[in-house]
Length: 553
Image (cartoon, rainbow, N blue to C red; front, top):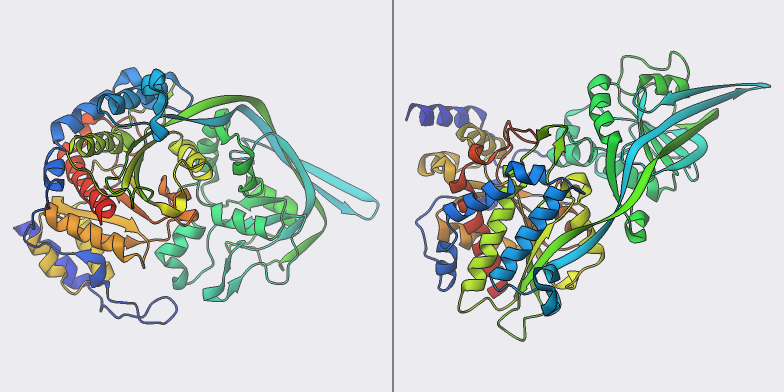
């Protein structure tokens, strides 16, 4: 009770009016519509209620123990542990009587559930950024080696040489009147930009941070690369001035082995080559003394006179095939059967580094276990939902969302008739103080009621776009039927950190089911005994009910 009093005090101290001014000076809509508050349980209709009750914590925990066991060696992409996990999932679907797409080849057995995902594996990457400056009859050249002053993240073997254009942060944000490319022609040139964001509180908005300054290095430059590509740039050099040593250490690990999509359709959608450089690279490009205390040098944007850069990368390359696992339960209504509700979870994790195994119990054995039990529960029902329900176990999420990206480029069911639900890291709940801060930050008028009436374990935050009332309605009904309180984190999803990202980019409605980050994230301590099977059950039952309600509406 003392803890609850402290939480209420925090809420009252941090609360802001629901109509406070937003970043652009406009009134922010009331957040109340983005919450499902605690209320009496309204039983779900049959046979859905029976299906939901069939998802139990013991079965979920058993799957997680198998998938996170040392024998599967962290389920790393391209490794035997992931292959074994894929076989386990496919066999589980087959034993549950869940069909493969198109019926599959009866002689193939569980293997009929596989969708091949061709990849390139690059090992022992080498490379450099070379800066050449010309002045009159003289020229000078300086080369910066990969792993010392530059990184070439996930860059296939290639060489690019071009003049260089300085473009500040490399950001275009019309709503804020900010355009680093105003008046610049970057066609056929290399863009030099600096990491981070311009100064000012307007840049602290969550959506802007996610788009332009993501904490995850793999996502930090996605939007900038896409913008540079659309403007015709042939490559980007991004300068990281803070914590270069730590970033270099992280990057060296990726240089040893990484993966890229094999098919041409994926390459066509990629941004231009990226080199991430230290302050020394920036000084070589801009000139000695150009860097000051400010994040971005006070140098005019534009073509750098008589400066050329070359980005070169090499490494050993081979082709390998990974696999998605797909299953389907055809809709019960012939008139609606061609509409699909797909629910997916990635099966891979980080594998091992030497003798150290990364078990990936929460990330994402938890989502995989939930998906298996959801599929079995729907398959066991004597009457299924009207629309088709598809199940997807993705490969390669950790290395680049390769499995889901391949599916979106090569869908089994038409994307324009698909709704996608994603399960990732659902084994850890929100902490009470985190819920209190969220309620305060969002200005929920009924925040005190939420905190007093709710067991914190019964709170879940979902990610989904605005403007799709059918998603909201299904989630609200599923929450009331399971005795849960929800918060809707409104997001376009196109810069998302899990497998819903490529669906969002293709315009597919989606819901992100996620638990919470925890100290063992991407660490060897992400073990089966460190997560909460009851939390996995709560999210799994919510996801099952939501899937069914969307498919049966």
